[in-house]
Length: 284
Image 1 (cartoon, rainbow, N blue to C red):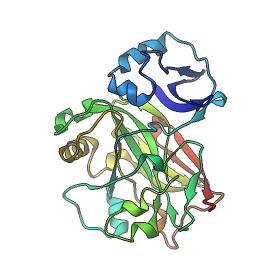
Image 2: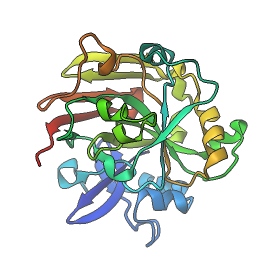
Image 3: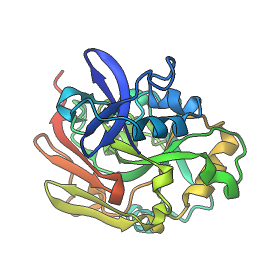
Image 4: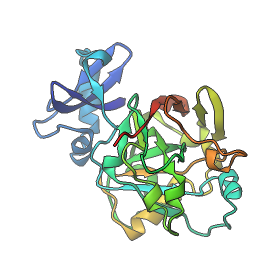
């Protein structure tokens, strides 16, 4: 299934995206299941699939306004320097453990919504990445069991405000400005992804290819990330792991290339679809 979150007539809802439209799943499986996160918490993905198979779409994309795939994750765990080409372009040393930082949920925007260059900077950089949504939570999850905890996958643009990122040794200040984390357009459920490492990942800015890699290039693959992350924090249904960006970021180009008002940025990952966002400048 392709699951989406959206607003309609002032309500936050969710549903399944099909070729013919949207099947609204809000409160249809059970009254309390009103979001993808609630669906995962109830371990009700099979019930959702059964309902989708027996239903016809009642909504069109024009009827809804998309939200980030998971608008309300308890945690967004981000991985830095997880492609060798990107590590080399940053000049960072080899890492024996993943480089981790966090992003806040209210920094996210949906497919089609503007990414925002903050008023205090002109150095918003693109970072095309694969997002992983946790379905079954846990602590100290073993690498061998990790993939059983994955609910699905999506495209992510982990936009970075580079000058603020360098204010401290911590990445946080440059990684969580409002409107800098684009997430969508949908979550492809794990049952439709036999091998995520087979997917290509590409980022384009105004149609020009800026990043082009394969998910098999990840230094720390998903099972090892889940084992590592769940060792220092419990993972819960609806939590999101953003797995890292390939080489080719704008900040390391000569001259540097940052996103500007009027630009259009796209992240495409095989069957996970195309995440497209215009870019605007924040107005105070």
